[in-house]
Amino acid sequence: MPNRRIRARASLRVAVLAAAVAVLGGAAPAPDKTDPLADQKAFQASFGERFPQVPFADFANGPYAVSAPMRKQWEDIMQFPPYDFALDEGKTAFETPFANGKSYADCFANKGIGVRQDFPYFDTKTGEVATLDGTINRCREANGEKPLPYQVGLMASITAYMAETSRDKPFDIKIPDDPRARAAYEDGKEYFYTRRGQLNFSCASCHVGAAGQRLRGDILAPAIGILAAFPIYRSDWGSMGTIDRRFTSCSAQMRSEPLPPQDKSYRDLEYFLSYMSNGVPISGPGTRP
Amino acid sequence: MTRVALAFMLLCSVPIAAHAADKSEAESAIAGAVKAEDAAGKLGNRWIPAEASLKAAKAAFTSGSWDAAVAEATRARLLAERAVEQSNEQKTAWRDAVIR
Image 1 (cartoon, rainbow over the protein chains, first blue to last red):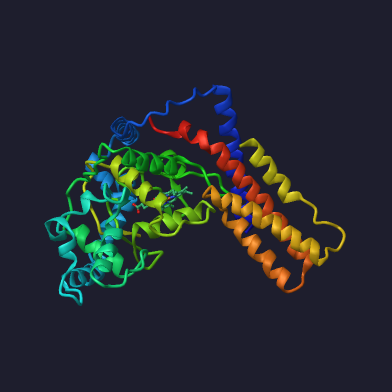
Image 2: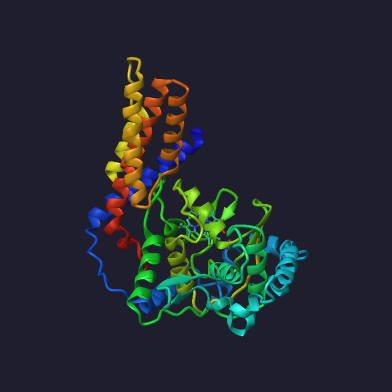
């Protein structure tokens, strides 16, 4: 407990310092115009400059891309990938028809094979961002099945299988020419950069500013390509976890009360992060030590 | 952000009220904390320790520990007020962090 307090104070001191620097520097007011493509170019260029030794496609591998010792560990784990069980379970579930005779394949383009890289997408019918996980549950409900819990279990297994059929396909997220789509993108961007929680961190504090650095036992993954490996098996979880599980645990690390899974802000955040990663190949399911 | 930091440090040194609190003081302290937490919630910025203190305050109230209820509720309210302040500041400040 005392440690936590000291850490909280230390980070606040850093924040105070940063604020002072910002004031002294007289940061100019930023333009408000939304230009997702320009954002994406700047985002990708900045990680390219930060990590010149990392080939672009390797950002699909999160912490392994930026840490040689972790990469070595990874090679050892991959002798027996801990997600194999989930992959088998997911494939079986995916191929088993619902009670009404239909199946997941009926709900997706190309029968759901090799489509992970197109998610999330902006659904012009609902006016909202549709994630892969959300679409799986909508498919179930449309066919008279109960929705699955979002963070662990079968949802992770099914998305693991769907990711595996999409390996090496580059993220191809589109922002249609629709003000609602641009608003969703902008909302996700704001969520990513906004400081919240007692420690006064934003997602960017750790996954942009401190990417590649060590935090306790972890190496912080760079924000680019950060969703390419999902779902992932983590040893400290002892099981598979979806994007919702990861967002929830990172919110908690910020001492910020997590949002419910698939909350609009989390979906918009996923939209923003995936769009920033366009071109990075799908590598899921992944495994982390 | 300086204000948030200062407030936090003050918070850590707030002396607990010397006199014994009664039920109605505990009630109003909790009501104040709930109101502040709701405001933070509207901004999508509930802080985990604020939620925890509010919960502890309610538990203390249920068991008739008025002093503890007031102390925890006060902590929850002050934290929630800092959260609101943080969110208000971030309404524009987040743009300075954008990679461009």
